[in-house]
Structures are given as structure tokens and as C-alpha cells.
Length: 346
Image (cartoon, rainbow, N blue to C red; front, side):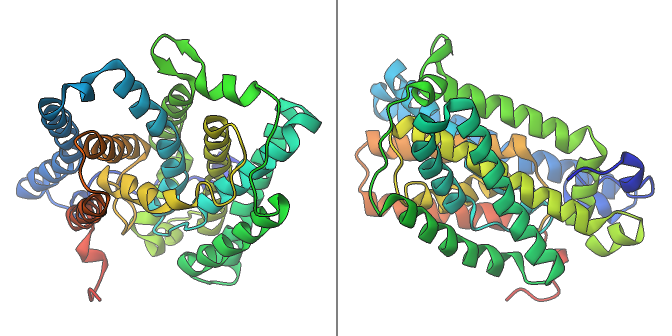
């Protein structure tokens, strides 16, 4: 869905893409507080990333090996893209719990169609269906005024049912080497193509968020939806576009997942939902909306992947790993959430 820039022009809307304290007004102490808060939210994942690399490298030198780096980049590729799918929805103050199920459906569909339709046509069809799923989420949320949490929770179940119906509950094999080459081969030595896709997509979405009127509008909606509407932002149009975009990006992540697995896997991407949300909040994007961005999601994904890889290579018990990851998510939410957005914390 496209709109003229004049339709969405909102020169009166202040840019809320920094920390929420930047919107508290005032110079002097207020400006200093805003600057420190912005620095804190972006510095935390960077410091955590460096600390994890140093710690796990000191515990086991194999962590710093080329093979380990390749493994981290492969994991980062999928997690970054699926987390990017949920980032813009969280930035507008919503949440999309169906991104992982959408990715699974995309993986099943690309595995089913790629030999019959050819790679390019199959990929375009899968991206279109992913976008359609996101658009349906957006329409139900905006037109029927159902909270996005409930809409996407239900959609998650619907998509999982469709995926299992298409695949008969089993893996879907294919012969084409296109996905393997697209995702696993290297155009730049040492960097899998999947990781390059994730980096390029992060860069494009960061430009979209910070250098376009659409980006200003989605941050305005996430920062204060009522104020954005009064300022002339077409809030429903922004939300529809964001959900549709989330669906397309989720489909891209599903294609990457299937390329890495070399088969369509029912429920394959579903377990990644929690990690994708963790990557978003660990990177510094607030669940309360209006703060963060795709570049921070990339940082968060790297933290989550390196944390997991480091605990694996140092033989940390799997159950302990779950505890650690859960604690990291809680800490990240506590640091990034804008408590002034809530009258009562329940």
C-alpha cells in the first residue's frame, strides 16, 4: 500500500526516535538526561557484546576460531531477519507474535513451489503471501480494534495449521540448489550470503526508519498515537503498512531458514519467536513503543546468538541456558521500557 508523501506529511510532529526522555521537554538538565539515556540504551548491548566475546574467548579459545565465527554468522542471519520483522510493529506500540509462524509457512511454501515454479517466481509468491498475512493482521487490528497481541496470537495458530496441512506434518524436500547458494555460499570471503542479506536488510530498514517521512510517522505513532493523529498522521495507514512489511520480512526469514536447513520443516521457525523478541528488546527497542530501531535489533541479535554459542561451547547446561536467557530478557525490558507511558504497572 502506497501513499503520497503529502498525504502523510506531518511537519508538526516532533521526532521521537531518541530515548523517551527526549520528549520530556526543556533544555539544560533535561537535555543532558536525554543524552545520557540515549547513550545508555545504545551502549548497553555494545558493551554486553564485547564483554561476552572477551569472556567466552578467555574460557575456550575455540570460541574465537574461524569455524565458530562462521557458525555465529549463520545463526545471526536468520535471527536478525526474523527479529527485524517484529521491530517496526513494536516501534508503533504493538506486537506481532505470528512472525515465526509466518516464517515457517514461507519455508514450507518455498520448499513446495521452488522446483515447480522456479526460484524467482516462487520467492516472489512467498513474499507476497507473507505480506498478505501481515496485512490481514493489520486490518483486524485497525478495523476491528482488536489488540495486536490477540490478533497475532490467533494468527500464529492459523498459520501453523496451514503449514502442517500443506506438508502433511512432515519435512518437504526439494531439488533446487538456488536457496542453498543464495543463503550458504559466500560472495565476500568468510561471510555467508545469509549474513549479508541480514546486514543489507538492516541497513535498508534503518534508512527507512531514520531518513523517510514514513519512519517519522511510525515513531510518532509509537511515541504518542493520539498526538500523532491530531498532528495529521494517518495512523491506520501507517499501522497497515507496518504489519504488511513485517509479514514480508518474516517471509524472507523463512526463506533463509529453509535455505540453511535444505528442507521445509513444519514448525521449524516457531521456536525462534522468543529469541526474536529477546533480540529486539536486548538491542534497546522498547516494548512500550517509539524508541529503538533496526540497527539496535542487529546488535540484540548478535548478543543473543553469541550468548547462546558461548554457553554451548563452554558446556553450560541447557536448562541453565534457559534461565540465563530469560533473565537477560527481563533485564533488557527493565532498562528500555518507558514507565511514564503506563499509569499503572500490572
